[in-house]
Image (cartoon, rainbow, N blue to C red; front, side, top):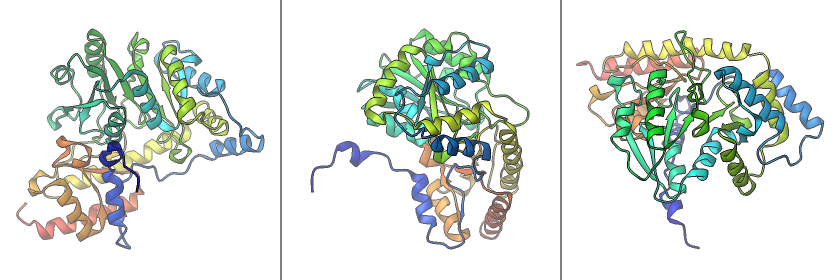
Length: 389
C-alpha cells in the first residue's frame, strides 16, 4: 500500500451522508438529511439541454464558460442590482461548490485565515483545508436570529485574515442577512482590505414577502468581492452541476486559468440549459417557493408543538434548525435516538460546527406527506418517552 497524504487522512467526512448511510438499515426510514429539492427540473430546461446535445454541442468550450452564458448571468445581475455587469465578470462552474473553491484558489496562500460562521456549511471547511489555509469560526447566536454580525467578525481579525465567507440565505440555519448586516460587514472588510465571498445559492427561497439582498447591491462591492451562485436549488438542477462566480474581471481571468487544470470547461449543452433557466419564464421558481413555504409551516409549526423543541421561523432556504437542548443530550446522540426509535433520519447540528451542538438540521424539501409523517412520528415518541417536558 502506498502512502496516504495527510489531507486524505484528515479531510472532514460528511456527517450528512454518514447519517444517510446509517438510516439505510431501516426499510421505512424518512430521509430528512440531504438538502435537495424533490422537484424535477422543469421541462423547458431539460428540452433545451436535449436539443443542444442533438445539435452536437458536446465539445470543449472556453474555460471561463460560453459567452452566451456569461451574458445571461451578467444581465441577471445588472437587472437585479441596478449596477452594470459585463460578461467578463462571470465564470461558469461545476455547481456553486467548485465556484467557492476557485475563489479561494485565487486569493489564498497556505497559512492565510478564512472567517466562516459557526454553524456553517461543512464543505467550506474541507476546501479551506485543501489549500492549507486556516479556518477561523465566528459564533452565530440564536438570540441574533442566527445572523452573522460585523462586531463578532471584527473580534477575530488578524493580519492573516484574507477572506470572509457569508451564506445568505443560510444553510443550515435558515436565516438571511438583512441589508444593514451586509453593509456593516462589507464596510469592515473594506477597511481591512479583506475579500468577501457571498454564497447566495438559496437566493430564490425567501419567505414572508421579503426579498433577497445580494452583496452586489452594495455599490462598489463587485470590485473587491465575489458572489457564488448555482442553479441547483432555484431550478431543481442539482445533478446538472452548473453554477457560477461573479467578480472583477481580473479575478475571473485568474480563475479561468485554474479551470484549465481542474475541469477544463462546464459542458456547453449544460450551459445552454442554464441559459434557458435564467432567461426563461420563472413560474416554476415561484411555484417551488410556494410549496416550500407550505412545507416550512408543517416542520416549524409542528416542531414547536412537540415538548422540548424550540424552533425559530425559517427566513430563507429550506431548513429548520430546532433547539433540542432541553433533552440534555448531544445532538448526535439525540439524532441517533430519533433514527433508531422513529426511523426519521435527521442531521445533528454538531455536523455544522461547535455552535451547532444542541440543534438539529431538518430540510423541508420533501413532500408534505413525508414531512407531516416525520413530525407525527417524532411527536408520538417524545410525548411517550419524555413526559416530564
